[in-house]
Length: 246
Image 1 (cartoon, rainbow, N blue to C red):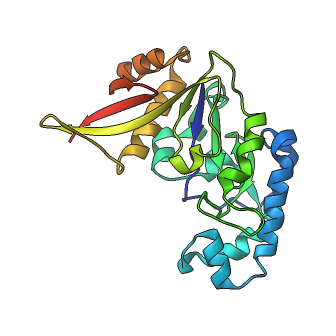
Image 2 (cartoon, rainbow, N blue to C red):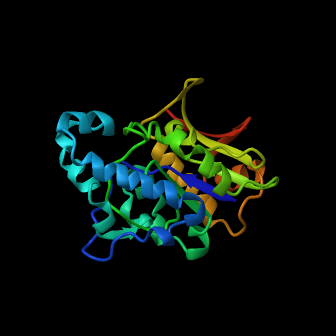
């Protein structure tokens, strides 16, 4: 089993220390050239007008200081991705506290890095799937071919996908089994998809799967682990649906 996590808008600021080492990141041979090109583009981006930079990064004026941050990422202090990413999903997952054997089953999607391992050291940055840099275009398109070469994708593999649609657009397996996780509320017989608790649900389910004594090999086994952890779940096609009272 492999669990694919989304990045998060919220990020911690690493303490002063060594910068990112591109050669040490996951799939450096396959993704390194494109990572370097993106860093070059962000360095150039620091010289354009603020209005243009805000538009291309798809950020608000209140986040304008991140333009300068992105322009010097090669020299910025780095921290393990498991400690850098914050937010609801990561609060529930507590990735940095999981055993090493569990973290080895995790990859984190990123518009800037393609994917990273929890232990990969990266700096604070501001670059989402909504960004549209000149000569780069949509990040999902930028990464698609390289991720297609790099990512594990064998028949019989189970990939549990916690990513949002914007990040899932960059890569989907062609041979492995892909299992998404969705959240629903159920009240008076009416079931509705919910977004406000979906990140919390995905974090909790990911934690249960990673802490299981035996990693699930198929969707049915993943559903069984989730039920043992106290979730009400249903398998619907390629999705594990988590049902909670309204």
